[in-house]
Image (cartoon, rainbow, N blue to C red; front, side, top):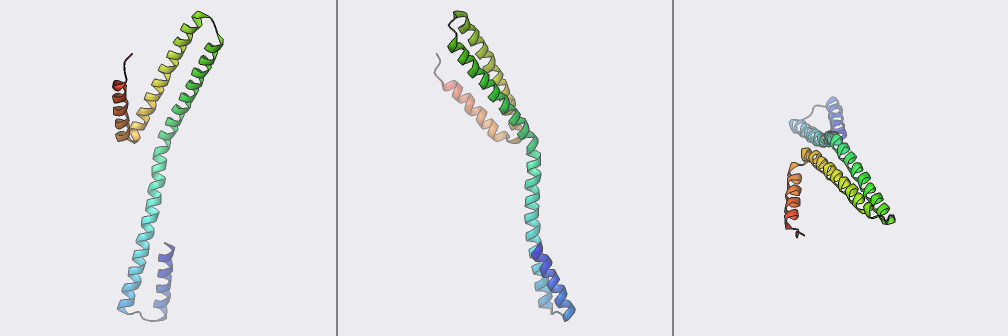
Length: 143
């Protein structure tokens, strides 16, 4: 854009000094147009990138909150595993398994919610991931 303004300024200065030929007028207008179009393209591209970031930001915040929730839940699993190692009571194993099961169910629900958040942004990738997860579940050996 700066180059377009410089070319416009030079052409205005030259036009005040003498009469321009038709070829000079066409060349100056062509250069001004080309530099203006190139500048507009780059400014438009930057503007589109900024707008896309603003659109994605709320979804990214939501997904980030869910990620934090998953990390906190995994921390609780670790605490329960550590507590079960330190306890020798037979009932504590059943209780620990029940706690771990509820935490894992909570983690799965949070992961499902996060997946739905991403489905709004990248539906094709989420469908592919869902298909891959479904396929891998059925290919596991059953015990």
